[in-house]
Amino acid sequence: MSSLFPALTKDPGERPALRFGDRSLTYAELAAAAGAVAARVRGRSRVAVWATPGLETAVGVVGTLLAGVAAVPLNPRSGEKELGHILTDSAPPVVIAAPGDELPAALAGLERLDVDVRDVGRVPEDGAGEGDPALVVYTSGTTGPPKGAVLPRRALAATLDALADAWQWTGDDVLVHGLPLFHVHGLVLGVLGPLRRGGEVRHLGRFTTDGVARELNGGATMLFGVPTMHHRIAEALPGDPELAKALGGARLLVSGSAALPVHDHERITAATGRRVIERYGMTETLMLCSPRWTPPDPRPSVRADGESRAGTVGVPLPGVELRLVEEDGTEIAAYDGETVGEIQVRGPNLFTEYLNRPDATAAAFTADGFFRTGDMAVRDPDGQVRIVGRKATDLIKSGGYKIGAGEIENALLEHPEVREAAVTGEPDDDLGERIVAWIVPADPHLPPGSEELADHVARRLAPHKRPRIVRFLDALPRNDMGKIMKRALPRG
Image 1 (cartoon, rainbow, N blue to C red):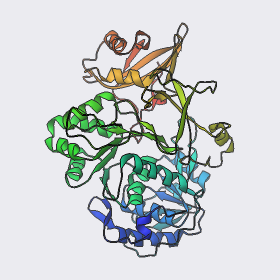
Image 2: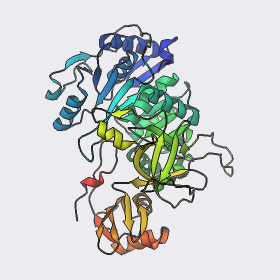
Image 3: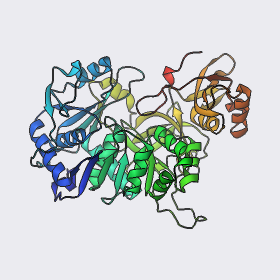
C-alpha cells in the first residue's frame, strides 16, 4: 500500500511537523529521527511505546510504523496489574521510551530503546501490506481485563482520509491539543492525522485554556478535545476575551471520546460564534460519524449546509456502513429521532481482531460482518445520528419504554444548580427499571430539590423520563479521557 506518511517519504523539507512545548521537529528532522527508530525496530514482532506526551512518543510510533511493525501504546498511569496483563498479552520484546523516563518494574524484562530525536536515519521503503497490524490499542476493560484491538494499516489510512474529506483537512492546518498519546483520539487523530496530511501538531503537554488561547491566536487552525476540556473552556470564556477571540478565529473545533453536554455547546457558541463539531468513533472502529465542515457564513442569518447540531455526531463518514438494530437484530428503518437501536458498523476502518481472543472477536461481529458497537442511538429525520448511551450502562427499560441516559443527562445539565450529572437504571418491581440521577450540585451547600430536578426533566423531555431517585455526590468518577465511569458509582 502507499505510505501512511507521504510527507516523510517524498521531500520532507523544513516545514514544522511536531511541537511539544518549546521542543520541535521539522519534517526533515522527523524523517531522520523516525528513520533511525525504524532501523532499530525492523523485524520485531511488536514494539511497546511508553506513551508520555512528548516528542519521543510521536517519533517512536512513527518510526515503528515506518518499519512495518505494530506499536503497542502504554498508558504511563496504568496500574501494575493492568500493565502486566497488557505486556503478557501482547508480548512485545522491546519498549521505546524517552531518555530519562523511569519505567515500572513490569517492563524490566524488555529490551529498552531510548529515542534520540536528533538521531539521523533513512526512511525505509514501505513494504507493509494494508492488512498488516499498525497498532494494538487496549480497551478500557470495564467488564474484565483490557482487550487488545488490532488496528490494521488500512484502518488508519481510511479513517484519516475520510476525516480529511469531511473536514477539508489539509497540510495548511495546524492542530493544537493536549490529549494523551496512548489512545486513538490523541495518537491517531491528534498526531498521525496531521502528519498524514503534511500539517503541524502543537501539543500542549498539559491542557490549559491559556495554552489553547496562545496557540490558536498564534496560527493554529484546529482544536481537538474531550468534553472535560471543552467544559473548562466554557467555564473560562466569560472572563477571558483572548480565549473567546482565539476560538472564534479557529477553523475547526472538535470534541470526542464522550458526549459533549448541550449546555457547553451553547455557552461556547454564544461566546465565540463558533460551533463545536462532535465526531463519533471507538477504539475498535476508529472514526465512524462526523458532520461535514463548511466555512462559517459571515451572514448570521444564513445557516451552512451540514452544520453541526448540538447533541448529534453527524452522518456516517465515507466508506462506513452504519445501521441501527433492535435487540433481535432487526434493522430499524425509522428516521424519527425517537426509535432507539444499537449501532452496528462495517467498513475498512475496523479492527481485525482482539489479540489472542478469538471467541471475543467472533462475538463482536454479526454473520454479515457488522461490528456490534454496544452504543445506542437514534437517527433524526435529516439522517444525523444522536448517541443516547451504552447498551450495557445507558439503556434503561422503564415502564415499557427504552430510554437513553444521555438525553436525561443533557436535560439535567441545563438546570442552573447542576454542575455534573449521570443517569443510570436500577431494578424496580413495578417499572422493570427506575431512572436514577447522580448529581454534583453547583453549590454543594445548597443542592437543588429532587422533585425540582425530576420536574425539570419531565418538562423538557417526557413524564416517563423523569428520575425516580436523585443522589448527590461531590464528584463523578471519570477515566483518563474524561468519560464518566458509571460502574464505579456507589450502589444505593
